[in-house]
Image (cartoon, rainbow, N blue to C red; front, side):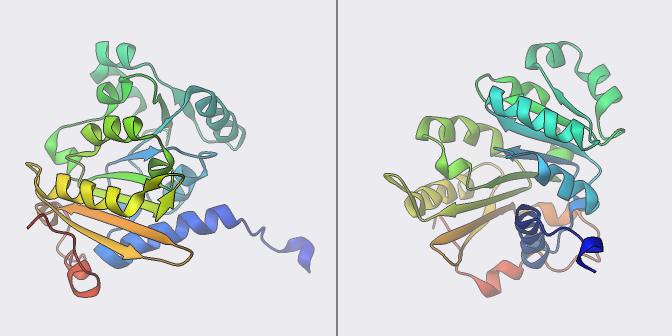
Length: 237
């Protein structure tokens, strides 16, 4: 009966939906990534969804300090290790820290958005960065512009950038913002293909991927050019 039925969680359904978009558009599964940076992690449940669908790399949540404490509480209460990390400490002991913590216990590392700690904890070795996902659903485009500009310096170089957004938020025109971000990425040293997908309820999905990441994934992956045939691309030229 209903007493034995699985609990339906709308939030988890959204996480799975976003993961499936990545699969449909780029042919990539959570297990294909080595590193994920989640901008504004909500309750932290997105990290659990990625883990349960095969991701085994290092997961970072970048958020405000009070929210990080709530995420740590919810994740630990649910049996998932989560640590608030200090960028200076990690920077001093980077190799030892990650040798102990990176993916071995499925931990989530929680990084304050009020500091520059994220630059100390992200692995920017190019072979890792190619297989890294920058992920933000509505959070980035609901942030003030100075916060967006700050994190853009970090996201450039990631193999895949995935954003969900409303067309407008308060006084911000997110369509124009997406076009500006697309121009930034397609003129960056790591040239990107960018597409903007219209959705229901005035939402947009923004996907960008480095043109050289196809070499980093196995040959049995579906074509990374799927987006070209289905959606108009935003190109700087």
